[in-house]
Length: 296
Image 1 (cartoon, rainbow, N blue to C red):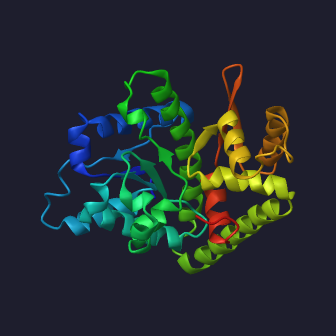
Image 2: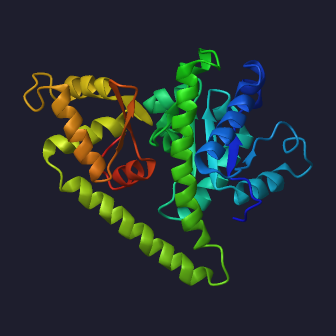
């Protein structure tokens, strides 16, 4: 991937963007701007409006664009799952992701609720949807209906950019190992590095106490990139500890989360004076799902 290549390829259904008053175009521009603020570097995004889909050889055009990008953002809606273009874009990037083992090259944004994600029976018949459903995703369903200038939307873009920044950095490192004249040796090195990294994550998880592992499972099974600490604690109580025998207070829960963050299994960030947000690390989630420590 060269400096002139697009860092992000947006895969979306054109009708969704048109219906929502070019909202996805706006989101692409705001995310690109936020990434520049956070990195100090201009980052290009490929957001096709109509040129590729009107091209004579659209498959070749899409293949070229996806092959040059560092990350594919999949905007999941019912229309997205009806689009042959979107399916092709996902398939091409998924092939690259498998080649660059250890990298997460696809980030789903859940924009409008879709039965392909919500219905387990439908997912069983749709490998494309099943693969997206198991990933950590950024939930934009409620934010879609909010004014673009509101604090929740601006904060969500900030957090999305933080996640994208990490994914791009990881992808760039691993893809560079597979993009030189010594491709075979570099590919082997990337595979060993990715395997070692996955082993480190797995070891960090399995050496935790049972309660700590349950906290991690709760976080990643929610398929959200971030959640307020109090909301995660409520979910943990509901699913794991309804009688408060494992963790009595939110303060204790907070310190347990800090320990897990120190081990590299999640991230915590203060928002304001009294609120803490817990964020997943997509690469950690992928390892834990792939190695069957967490099930969808």
